[in-house]
Amino acid sequence: MLSPAPAKVGRRAAILSRGPTPLLLLALLLVTSMLVALGIGSVTVPVRDVLDVVVRRAGWHTDASLLDDQIVWQLRMPRVLGAAAAGAGLAVAGTVLQSLTRNDLADPYLLGISGGASVGAVSVIVLGVGFAGLVSASMITLGAFAGAVAALVLVLALATGRSGALAPSRTVLAGVAVGQICAAFTSFVVIMSGDHDAARRVLSWTLGSLAGLRWHSTLFLVVVALLALLLILSFSSTLDAFAFGEAAAGSLGVSVGATRWTLLIGTALLTACLVAFTGAIGFVGLVVPHVVRLTCGPLHGRLLPLSALGGATLLVWSDTVARSLVDGQEIPIGVVTAVVGAPVFAWLLRRESRTA
Amino acid sequence: MRVDVRGVGWDVDGRTIVDEVTATVRPGTFTGLIGPNGSGKTTLLHVVAGLLAPDRGSVRVDGDDVHAMGARDRATRVALLEQHASTTLDLTVRQVVELGRIPHRGRWPGRSDEGAEQVDRALRLSRVDGLVDRRWQTLSGGERQRVQLARALAQEPQVLLLDEPTNHLDLSHQIDFLATVRDLEVTVVAALHDLDLAAAFCDDLVVLRQGRVVASGAVADVMTSGMIREVYDVSTSVRHDHDAGRLTVTWHR
Picture (spheres, rainbow over the protein chains, first blue to last red):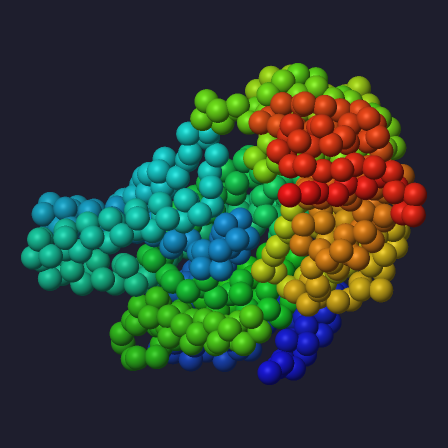
């Protein structure tokens, strides 16, 4: 039986894939979300007062109270802004990896990068606990970054053929293998250390948390996300050229090898920078690009900025839920994104099985 | 545009796939590349398209070395139609054809109507202008091949390379497709399996066996039952059919 759904979706996609409307709408949604999220927490701040604080910080005179400024600007803004930057970065990384490998399941996790970051972070947490007091947040960050880069190097070394070509399918398989080894190592270290505090910290790290973000780390994330977005946007028509595979991209004037190396290493470094501060957050890079592609079409000039905005909005809300759903306790943000993302992904799968 | 292939060789894992191939394609002609499976046709086309760098020799288009020019520059002069184009993306026909404008566009996402005129022209030339708003996934094999042809023409190439373009088409679509290509004002090199179609549509032929050129020249000189017996090990009669008004190839057992 022919379902009428694809044609309907097709028409909707055609409308949304033209003009600047969706971009403006999503940008507006993100800004509104951030303003609302800034007011949510143990102390509720009305949106009006949030606006006063932000406008005063931008240099205009308002009568924002010092307490509100403390709560909104010093405590919540780093988390909200950091969530937006991390969400945008993860979604863009997922988009690029899916297009480059032509694999719907590709996301930063598939390349083993998060696994490597976990090994780095866990090593610092567990080994550092032995030297009481030596473990600082920045050491965990450094460990995570080193682990992510090491995993990336290992994946690329495994995936590179004798000819120097980097085949997407082999890259994904190498990523899965490295990811599994990293997961095994992480579990082993945690079990063997027999330290309950370390085990708890490791668990909370592997599920992600933005609780550790301060202004300096957030600014770093924002700069990294913006730079990565700019680099990747400059590849948007190059990525379009991959629609019919690599030979087709080559015949459209794309240097396939150089593009693949630049973008794989770029997204891997981006992911390494993000997970080093936030821990492993799943589903953003996997689900957001699919939803955007479905509603606004697969061309990257639109797909990339829309995915960035969508990922940012998703993570702003996920973090707000994570820090405010249960009083006085943080839920790992990875749990929230999984609860939202998994059903969406299942729905996408069902829809695809109907149209295929 | 004239294509000069000079002493081209390409190896993989110590095995020579294309061996000392030298051939000239005259400007504006339709040249058929024929030979058994595994004779190196696709590899040779990919070398000419600049996708593979030859281990030996050179390919020149109108005097310029294909492998010395930038990838973008090359894509505005040489376009390739692959054997079987497939995508999982939900693209419209127009969007697919617009991909052909990528080598002409800048780095950054810009005006969406860039090259609209060339895209329209390409759609008309390959006679798919009626399909612009259709979605790629809903097209038949024959329609897809024509849309890919339009994509290649939107590149405004001087040389068009076709890799077994009629493989998945029924007889009438095969004839339509080759007739459309023959009437284009570009130099065409097509790898073909069907010798009868090659005899009917090509001006010149290059015959490959085990990566080497065993014959080349005008169709009437090259397409002989002797050549076919030697290369394919099949008995045929090749004759001018007065009713059809063309050279025909018929096989016997």
